[in-house]
Length: 131
Ligand SMILES: [Zn+2]
Ligand SMILES: [Zn+2]
Image (cartoon, rainbow, N blue to C red; front, side):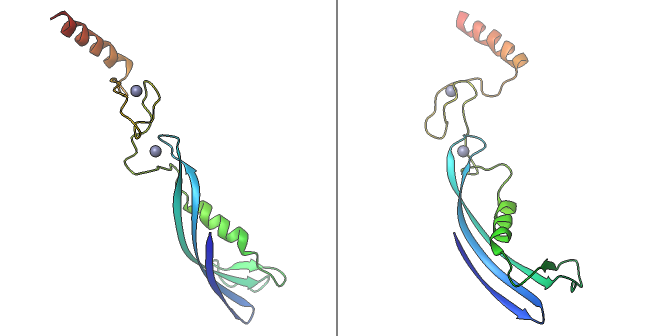
């Protein structure tokens, strides 16, 4: 992870700008494989000393130090996808045999067919078999 930033301090008000680039290991929500997501964030924060807050956007700091670690981690957390995908067209796991379909086509039929349709398909297959 790399963090680049600069802080400007004027009269008790500190403006911090930073850019973060990080590689985060995530688990794909379709195929449950681990993959690396690149996160790039640029953000700026305005901090004022406790008691000097003049607008909602401003954050308050106490003492002489601002702990950026938590801020950066929060920004990264906010940037993480709700449903991570290893690739946008991830094929996911086979609902029949559970194999990762990105790695190999397993040849299973009946992908995401509900039970009513499955009955229908069985009938059709039986018919075809008989011909
Ligand atoms: Zn995937
Ligand atoms: Zn399969």
